Length: 111
Length: 120
Image: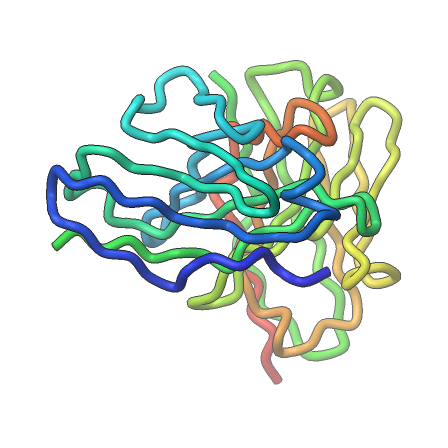
């Protein structure tokens, strides 16, 4: 099972919006609405931002939003802040071996 | 509050085995799946498998089939990940994560991670 494809890096200025894509196949992202997103700061465990494509856990800022179109899921960060500088990962359920697969990860830099 | 506390760092030789523990507190251990994820130095996250603490049922990523075993001891609310035939590319931080159900992934609590170093 190959990893889902994410851009290696994205940068933006404070206050801007950025969108991170997560591209899979019709066996994972395209078929199931079971895509989650994580934020990971250096040396820390990942933090859940979005689950089931677009749902936010309580306590997560509404600046983070998720969506999906076809085989690609997306995470949008609005009003970019310095603290958003981190690595971001998507994860999807996949019918291939009925398991899970992570994205390759995206490093977000706040200019 | 919900906590997952993992065992300490390990250094192993190639070919050896390692067993990492993940002690849960603050919630009903058998009510949530326990997943294991690893992250090699400077690399991305990699899903390894899950165990249902209630039934003991397991599911492993194909890559680790035959080399990883997930177990649990419900009497002490602890899950275990054992990886055999270690290689240098198994050097990574290993995380346990509580996930509410399957196949939806609501993994809201993770352990602090356990660094496993494989070196001769």
